[in-house]
Length: 158
Image (cartoon, rainbow, N blue to C red):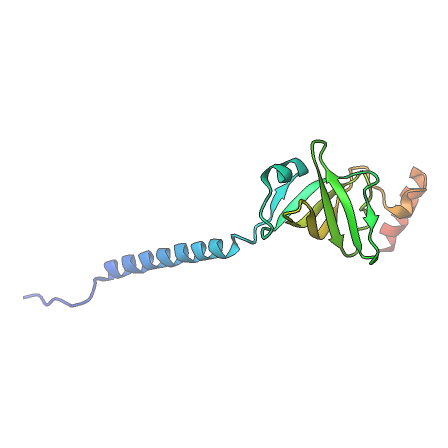
């Protein structure tokens, strides 16, 4: 007579372990997605943000061009207000902090922050963009051959 054991066969034990591992992985993925749901930063252009109006508790990115004549430093010296546009709509932006070096009128900017109920975008961080013809300030007033010489000296010195 054969004796039966009360446990699972090794083949079934492996199957149960694989199923448990898969359940744990799916649960961990769902938990991570749930925890990060409010951390995602959605990208809007002014016409989209005016039309869709994200809630003030949602972190978003606003991208567009800084409107000419709109940059204004407030009395406290660290708060800057300006207007970002995309050709169809404009959004007033307020930022407290040090502006990036490339932040100027008629240039691209990405502002990270929150869109307020009053229609103002309060930025926590600004990312200034430049075009493909960017030249560092130090080289702007030089002719092309002079800039190439300075670049060559810099590369050789490292």
